[in-house]
Length: 115
Image (cartoon, rainbow, N blue to C red; front, side, top):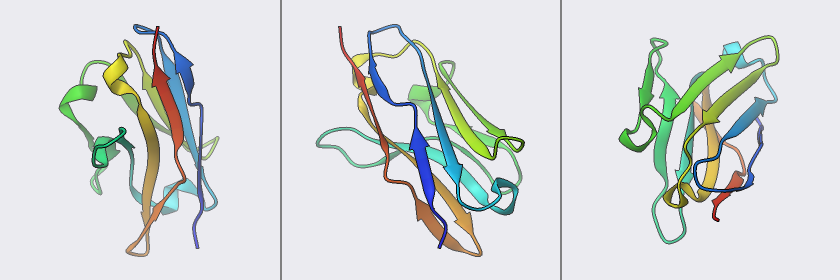
C-alpha cells in the first residue's frame, strides 16, 4: 500500500503563487504516471498536470503557462509550482501515482484563492 501525502495548500490572493508538494511512501522513481489533479466544489476531479509513462508532461489547458510540475528524486517529492492563481483555481488538489498497475491517491490539500 503506497501512501501519498500532499502539502503546501492554503489561502492566497488572486495573482499569487503556491507550491504544492507530494511525498510518496515509496521511492518516487519506482512510481509511474505521477500527477496532480484537482476538484473544485460541485465539480468533478480533473487533471492539472502529470508525467506520462514516457516521461513527458501533460498540462491541462487551465494550467498551461502558469503551473509547472516537477519531480525531485533527491527529496522524493512531486511538486507543483502554481503562479498567477485565480479564484477559479480554488479546489482540493490531489496527488496521484501508479505502482505495479495499482493506482494511489493522496487525501488532498486545499487551495483557496480569494481577495
